[in-house]
Length: 372
Image 1 (tube, rainbow, N blue to C red):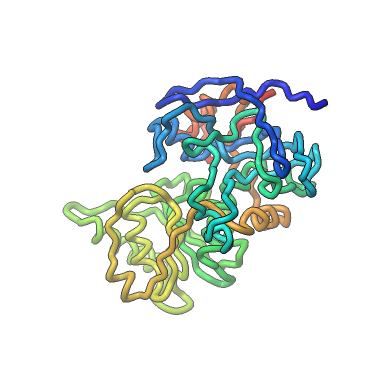
Image 2: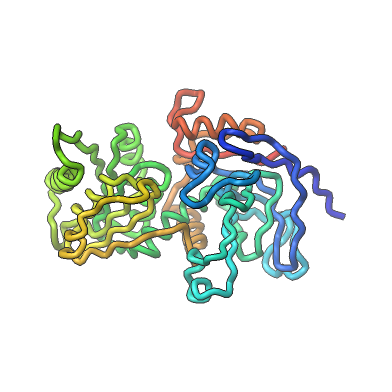
């Protein structure tokens, strides 16, 4: 007989209103596994739901368990499960799709219109003792990876999807990454793992840039301030020209920026990235920020710039993420700056929002341990 224990969960009831609740233990279908969640990272979207109650059209209208960057131990398996066993440590992919629509059948399941994604209203997330997923969304972790690594596979898969799957970065390319937060840093690491010879990190925070240089960036750039009376578009164009001049980059050929990965969502970063990308280059938008941005559309046209969007992750992204870390091509440990007990989840969210822990150290990624 399986002994479950309580399913203590961290629940968002409304804006800045969170409580611990006992939730029912999920019942398994034949092809599902029950994960005892041991590690959960805090994502910016979790913080946004906590303080604003919505992201775009996704509105918290009912109590919702937060969290979606998780790893844990297989606690129970459905009778149809073939490849997982109780006790295995796994990374959890938190989006369940219909498997029937054109997007799913064509291998782009991240675009499924009926996706059930953890901690996206109205669906509960993973910040509890138990969470269930179909067998194929629980990925076994090799012996040389621990559960903290497992929790980081979710944001790493976002970076894998944008840099490898969508942008198709190749060896010897020059890549510029806007934003040195967790996703931007992971994009830099993935670009290096894929063989990029130069990875330029661009951010307005000097401390983040210095960390990026120590982690995965070959070059860093702190933009100058806008001039009085300078339009946003003119500032963005000047900023791109200054980056090129500083690093001896050209607008065409082998010594130009092949790929721009935009991980901030800020309008000036989007504009600057379009100006910075080489003729015939790739611009990939990852960051969700400005909902409607003015862009230099003629520049996109005359450059034949490949302007792409990257959303979450899709087929093959989790396995590649695990493989890169297992092989030592990407080190996730430097990004995990703070770890909290489950009972201290409120403090963990506050530190993530502020970007600074009570210890006075900057927060890159905070991990919450599962309930004891």
